View 1: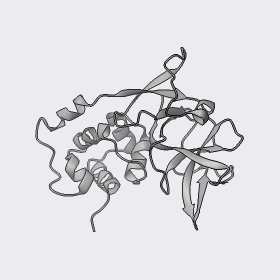
View 2: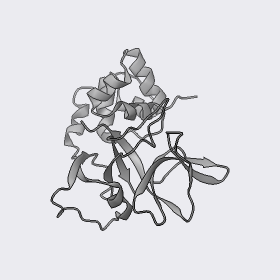
View 3: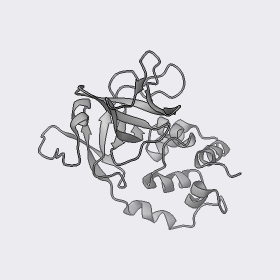
Amino acid sequence: MKNTLGERIRQRRKELKLTQLQVAKKVGVSHVTVSQWESDIMKLKAENLYHLAKLLNTNARWLLSGEGSTAPDIAGTEVTTNQITVKRLPVLDYVQAASHSANSDYSNISKMEWEDSPSNASNNAYWLKVVGDSMSAQLGLSIIEGMMVLVDPDETPKNGSFVIAKLENVEEVTFKKLAFDAGEQLLNPLNQSYRQIQVNENCQIIGVVTELRHKL
């Protein structure tokens, strides 16, 4: 049986004796993002695919499908990455995210922050700066305060997705990990000191996190 994209990334990284942190710095993402790729939790965006293939001394086709040779692409193949445009998306706070919609316009807000973003993110997407420690884990993956998450309301949430949700009569959003359990959808914090939240008529998922980024 073929291994997964994440397993192929991990395989080549270890063959080259690279750490996740080294890969993250060279590709321009957080080490958490690399961990998410290798765990098949987060999708690998086109902007990163060819840079990652080059770093891992292989080719994009093999990374994506496991088919063909692991040999690097021929010279000139990666020129497409230089033609990908990067869009600017707003950085919202938890209150702004709660009222965000496809019609929201932040262009006239003088102190609004904007962040370079993948070109294939939807125009409805936005960045959210993590606040609090509910996603800071004692062990394993930890998403700490100050990190940036790219939220796309047009993505479909899946089991294991990191999501943004809105609770009824609460002005702010909440950031949690989605889990399907016995027909229920539950929002789990990575910090076990916080409570689990059930997705129901009082709690609606309004966006899926597609990328994690350290804000330097």
